[in-house]
Image (cartoon, rainbow, N blue to C red; front, side, top):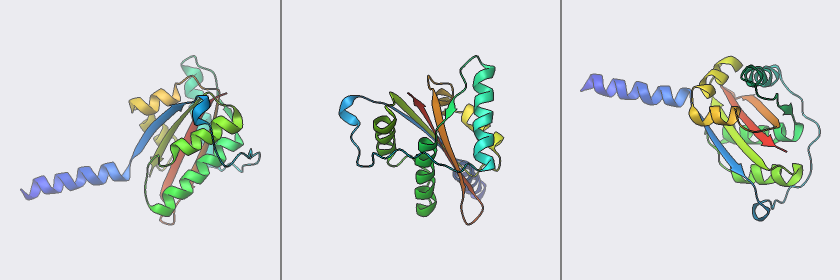
Length: 168
């Protein structure tokens, strides 16, 4: 019984320590209302963000898809979500509808998808995990034109990834 409990604790800890999830939305006129209509034009990308975007584009091109254009407004929305996840010690898609509605309204986007991940030390490890998950892979290989990303580190040194894909 003790071995079973230890195994269960290990499985739960593994899932918690290396978690990620995917979500997506397609817009229509009835769900594009938002209170924050300002386009964010400036974003300072860190090395991990630039590397992750490069790896995603290299993967897309390697399978015959278009490279995505980075967008500062989308990255800012990703950063807002990372701050939320860090402040609340969670990994989730809370308020994805609000983020996607803002992006659809401000950028006239037609489709929005989101991947999040936690506790991957490298960009390559995060991308590998996303590609091994059907929902994440679908977003990475999706019919998108632009993307944004935020890779933020909490006080304990754990990385949070939010990656939003957009078709404009």
